[in-house]
Length: 77
Length: 227
Image (cartoon, rainbow over the protein chains, first blue to last red):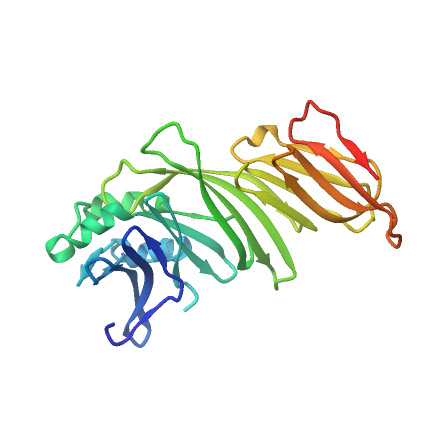
């Protein structure tokens, strides 16, 4: 795993995948969250960074500037 | 990090993600896994969901449990229930949460419907129906096979026993069974094969005399007492 990334200890099996969530520290006070998909058949791990706004509380969402609410969903292999 | 997302359950092809927020309750999100896998296979990881299209849906991508002041989840059960539309699957959530400083617990039963017709892996909760909330039950039994929920507030001999009976998905037909006498309850169980609910207890708080009260799931049959 990339340095600074920590995995939540609970993982689930779905079909040929092991699925979990991770956090990654961007700077001293900023974390990003995402999903980890480990293809057990191909032994390939995908990190899907799910938009931070999806993983934040509604209250926090309502208090944040609109630009901060836009989702970003990308992955890295 | 108080809001660490946790992958909590996969039902069918839906991944439920839980976010615990201290003193604010618990929220859930849902992600369609086949679409997510396809997304990871796109060059650069792009998806066919524009930010502008997604933004108006954002409030519906999550739902919050209603237990105000929750300080933690004790128990969580999620399972699918019959749905009329294949692209609108329905799920039942049975949640137990610690409230305040962990001295009280509440049970909450919710029925949610997910809209799979929108593009992209992040789906929305098209309907959230809060079916039943049990505040601080003394004892509770839930059978997901039959969607039965039984609860009794007082099992300590202080007032006549009342047991509430609910079938998840049918919030209008729940009923309350009143025994009309005080007993010290030692057990509450469902015997699905026999089709009955059994309350075991004693007529005397300090005595050994055992009693069992049988209520049939079919409410047309009268209940019975077995000594």
